[in-house]
Image (cartoon, each protein chain N blue to C red):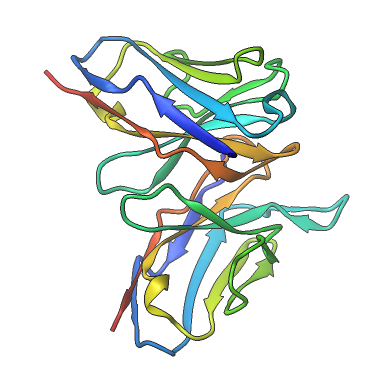
Length: 113
Length: 119
């Protein structure tokens, strides 16, 4: 089974500053036949279900602000918020969909400093 | 409106059984794989089970294998999770979610239904 590990567990960033969340998989989620990384990112705000932000590691879901970006390949991935806004306070999760069980990272709680 | 609405949660004792339902609307339900993801109180997301659009393929986390059964009725646009031999550690909000084509990432989520297992 693939284990997903995020860092840090929590993060406090000032408004307008950059926030960076890391995600590492225990084995590569890059499928060689199509050169795609089977990695998604989600945002979850209190009392709400998760919301898809990125898939294929860096493809932004429709409606996601462009201050959000996803990057990485193989086993190491990053979610970056270029200029933190108050509405970005949430818990962020990565998820691999390379192979079942389709595991999530433990989550990173993002707060305002 | 495109949405998923989960139901069936409740309070029950260890060893009990429960069936969750997830009603889908606004999209061609049979065309998409579906999944259950749970979240224990104050904890992160845990993928539980998934089923292909036809229902011919099912997948489970090790933590529920042999106790939970996922199924779907495409004529009723409804996803199910039959949960048997429930344990305290199964206490969680159970979300249903829609997969994207044949890929197991999830672009539509239901609000979830709370299952509490306690004596």
